[in-house]
Length: 386
Image 1: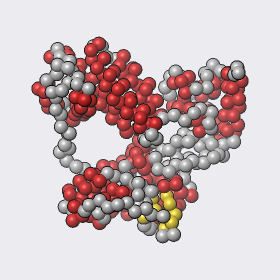
Image 2: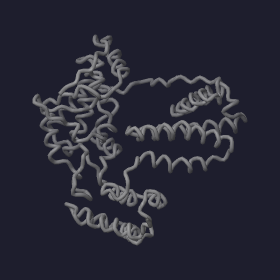
Image 3: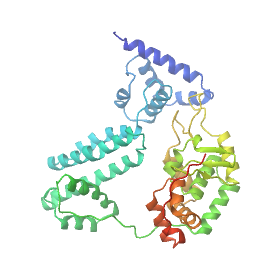
Image 4: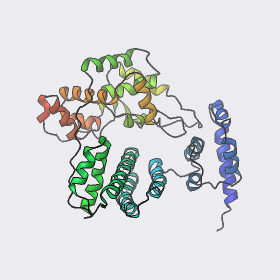
């Protein structure tokens, strides 16, 4: 059966128009329409100049207006859902490879990037796992490996296959700590026998950012009792200070992660054992759930996210959350480490891991660093909480 693409585009445009007209906050739509290029973009979409597909939008110059339109189309089921960070990586990689002048370096990097990183990220995405962190790490590891292999060729006339341990040691000793990101490449090269004579250990941080208990409790008290920021950011800060949750995970939490039980509120943070929510945080969290911001941006159907973002159907961007928490004076890593150290002193490390979504290794490491009596406590069989 022949499908008229122009008719399909007109139908999609009509559906998008109906969705925009039905927004609970028309002023937000009007503000967006006044931005440069937005009307022209919508007109090209409505007339079929831009086919209704992710691939067509990918061919447009990368801009916030294109990504906002993509979010609206996806949210209203006019485009299929796709992994945003995987798509960004797939668009980034060809340009990165094109910038490599040396043919041998490019061949090696392309094999590493496609057969290790791209395959791994696609597998994570297919299983429904988050890909933001893996994509960020992949970009850094590929970039640092390009720098090393280019230096190796220009300085010593060697390739990855002829590289010697002294080359790697010299490179790591004379530069920033980001150079250790080449370790992943050599682990991969060892497995596929490209290079079997190089050893790079894990980089050990010289210092561990750590707030004092007094600093952590003072920040926690300010978030719970003072009007230091908007309610949503106070809730996010408390999740960091009280439950040691990474900012990336906080941003992606869903409203359904807050569970009302006969015994009070609980948070689903790990695989097992929802964590109890004490007062006054329980009241603060309940208030936030009833008044989440950005619930009417481009849609009248609400949002599943605990921290809805500015774009339809998306949660708050982790970078936005990071910047705001830093602005109110919170050392993100120091606060998370301090929270974990405090928790493993009060609760066996395996239980902390199961409640908060950490690995046993991480919580045991913090327990040992805190010289905690629970540090030798063996993991127990999970107990489901109804």
